[in-house]
Image 1 (cartoon, rainbow, N blue to C red):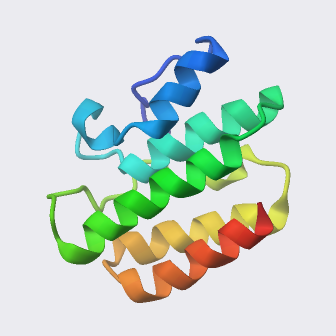
Image 2: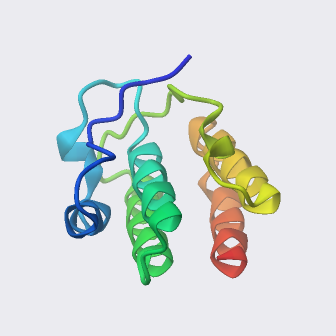
Length: 124
């Protein structure tokens, strides 16, 4: 099952970087899309294009969302609309870390997800 992510992958890199820096929950079209998934897809596209600074912006944005999930400040979706999106990168370790992170987020286990997020940061 593939979900429709609300961004245009053919958009200029500058626009995608701007999208990566925003909190995506405000632009979501359905509850089936994790805001982290939007960030992941944007990051994967920027990585494919070889954009410098995409990794740092991605980690910063995911950390902000994670912080919001931890304190319960927003009603963010927890249903994974695309369980296969981890395959968008060619790095198998990074793909498995992302898959594990999303699994923790969907189960609302923010503690283990925080450790996985640190591992993702190290991998990038």
